[in-house]
Amino acid sequence: MRTIRREILTIALWSIAGMSVFSAGLWIWGVWHDEWSGYNTGLSVSDGICNIAVVPIVGNIIPYAEADQDGSENTQPFSTNPDGVLAALRAAETDPNIRGILVRIDSDGGAPVASEIIANGFKRVSLPLVALIRETGTSGAYLAATGAKTIIASPFSDIGSIGMTMSYLENTAKNTKDGLRLVSLSSGKYKDYGSPDKPLTAEERVLLERDLKIYHEQFVKEVAKNRNLSVEQVAKLADGSSMPGSLALENKLIDALGDQETARVWFAEQLKLSPEEVVFCE
Picture 1 (cartoon, one colour):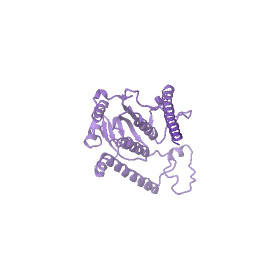
Picture 2 (cartoon, rainbow, N blue to C red; picture 1 turned 60 degrees about the vertical axis):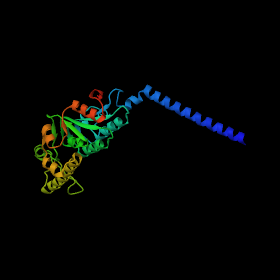
Picture 3 (tube, one colour; picture 1 turned 90 degrees about the horizontal axis):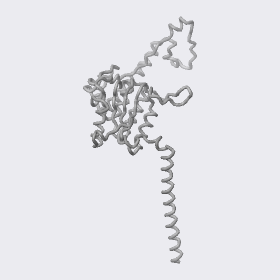
Picture 4 (cartoon, one colour; picture 1 turned 60 degrees about the horizontal axis):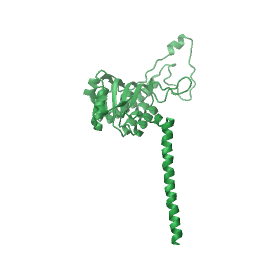
């Protein structure tokens, strides 16, 4: 009996060893294949030297990725969508060589929900993250920036514009001149309100201004929360106007004046590195 047990134990040990060798070999082959095929290159952010990912927020912030005429996704940086930003953040966090994220902003804003999604994405990032506003960071782009714990901006930048708009161009006079007439076929009284091809009634204006007030108050609340300011402080600034970076600093809408080299020093302090060791992936 002892001999049989010993043989069973030996077989079991050899099986475990064989499986371990097989698993290790499979892992090594997978890594080699990924490197050979370029699979890892497509997923990695760092080239092995740089350690700070750069995520751009440029152009109009829209809820979806723009497509070229052939239907493929447009990768040109003329607009920003939240899914693209979140994907860039995930890629940075999963790259072992990346130690921080620089969000570089040149945008007048755009869709409020898309801007909110981006701001919340910044807040969930585990790596040190700083937002750098270069030329413009207004409206939705400023809301997105407030998701970063630290905001740096050029003293010549344009900051803020905390507010909402639903303004549009009415076409009724032009349509009349061109001999065009809107035939309204709607299932509800207000279904086509806001159409540029019909005059806005007093009742419809009340509805739109009601919604604007709700959106505006939410915008103010989110900026106040993200910037650790009182709602009253932000409300005083939320008249839709923007301001230079230096004035934005006075009003605590940003944390420092500077450029990318200022951000480099910030990362060096956060990561306990020398500025020379901070290398942007660009």
